[in-house]
Amino acid sequence: MTEDPSQHLKQFLQLCDNFKYNGFIDDAIRLRLFPFLLIDNTFSWIDSQAPGSITSCDKLAGKFLEKFFPISKTVQLRREILIFKQLEGESHHEA
Image (cartoon, rainbow, N blue to C red):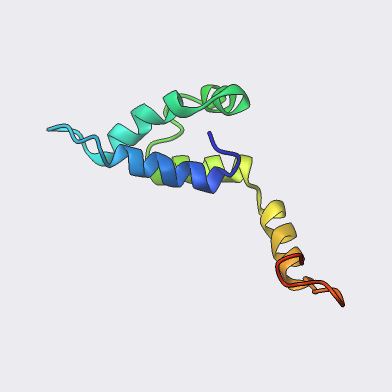
């Protein structure tokens, strides 16, 4: 898994687009493959979910991002963007 949970999901969905099986909808394929791409605490997290509690890829993505990229982190990043200030004498690249 990449460090960024959103990027991980994006790469996962791109990978899944390569798999097509007659009689299987995309959601079923994604739900089956997702645990195989997880390591360490992310694998423990998916393994701890109650059987049948994740029934769609959208629900899986929502729970995954909620756990590994919580709203508090989003708020923190937005705050950092809003208070960004280039210091005097600092190039744009350095800032």
